[in-house]
Image (cartoon, rainbow, N blue to C red; front, side):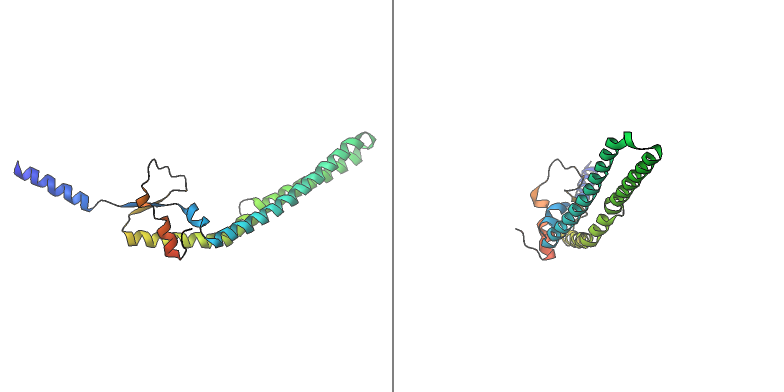
Length: 171
């Protein structure tokens, strides 16, 4: 019986020694503390707003063409109606293509985001890795992603450590 109790305590102490430590960071919070990220976001927002205005203007132009077409429809021959309808279809296709070019997968907004934000994200992830290794953490969760945490102890939040490691002071 004594041997069994001894083995139990040895086993319990071994599992305690090999217990893995976890931490978490809030990458959204970290990125919002970095001035370069704020500047990149502002540039992306401006570009996006400009492109949206351009696309909206083109859709407004198409609506005016359609309204004029509907108003003049009774005076037009079949050939003229087909021609105008074709012109409107071409303009709609061009606007959809412009929209895809600017906002679609692999579009200009995506490329610009990769150019401006990706280096900052890489910098954050490198700092997270360094903090994890320095703190002896096995896993670090990202609180700002779709990860659900019912409870988080602030003592395991490594977001400020990541910012300090990167040379940014907490605001």
